[in-house]
Length: 393
Image (cartoon, rainbow, N blue to C red; front, side, top):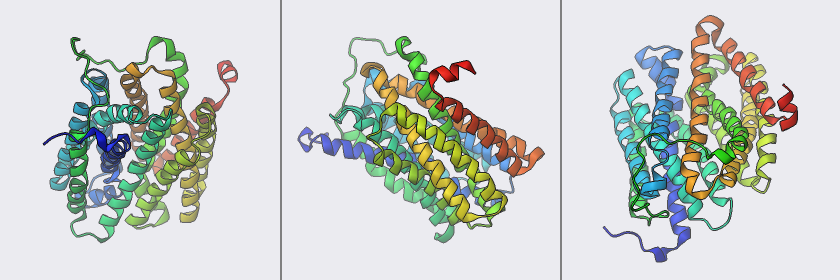
């Protein structure tokens, strides 16, 4: 098979890269509304589900730490091919899973695919777009869109499809097939560095000259992704226990949060990166605070509004922080720096959610969520302070 002709144009390459990133990220949240079905079918606790979710994060971090820098040396294409290949393998394992160990393995492999694709495809999107900032905007918006549509697909399957724990992953396999062909056939946007030794030791990190500037976007992605973790791992259970909602509505709540996030990143793209990052953290904290009374009073409408406000803040903080990283880091160091950025984000995805799962036995799920809101909300507000004020605390 010969590579797609370069004459097809940069726009075509960009569109296929967008599609590949979308379907890989979509697969990472397809299981979200299915967790309650897994709990019922296999009789496991909420903490076990948070551990399964953490397996996904472990896979992402493994890929980012061990291979996040490789596309700077061997090219974007081979790393992207490997990433989509892992996503295909994960869909197969999901479709045949018959217990918690298989589910955890599928989540880990899915994380490997996302981790490999994240740095390589983000860098490739930027290199296939001549307008400054548009590649970073596309990467952040498509990430949120993919994460948003996954729960929608999973929720519809759970409500209407036969054998939902298997059928939905067969559908995802069919969606991944053209993505794999695309990353295999598209021209390389960053040729390999010939004559230099590939550094196989972990090289996730930030160039020394920009480390101080990197701290603020790292804090922003940490808060934004902690919210992703809460919604992806526990919102289906919260919706069932406190709102009495069916599984498709639980999936819709996640879609609202992440969908608003994706739209916010596109609609507010003209805002300066630092402004978007700061304002997003404030709005995110407000949305988290609104979540608690909606659960306390069992209000689905209140939860929808809280999810939308949280998504608005999450999208602004995410877009602004990723755009800022791409502004301050030189192009030849970008893949490993973006990988470091996502290492912070995915660590924050897992650790607070595991803490909520562990606290649930002692405080109840609502009490554990109060602790989450207090910790992440306060961190977001500190991150939104001007540097001089923050330095006094």
